[in-house]
Length: 73
Image: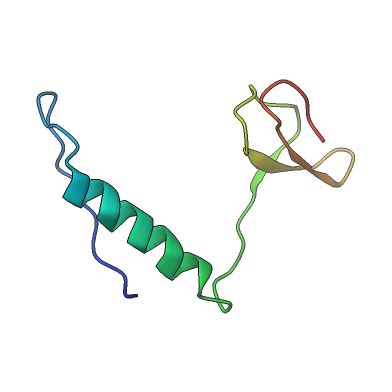
């Protein structure tokens, strides 16, 4: 699989087609196959709002946390 530049000019009335969803899934797979890509973290001094899968580095206690959607683990 290869990376395809995603659509970035969405308008309020644009619908997400099956083709678009397939391109998104293919791009996700292409990214996952790249072992040389850097893993980036948000750096914060306090806990942000929860969003399942959100990951950040806590600069005060020097730990990485991931949200389950309701708790930081």
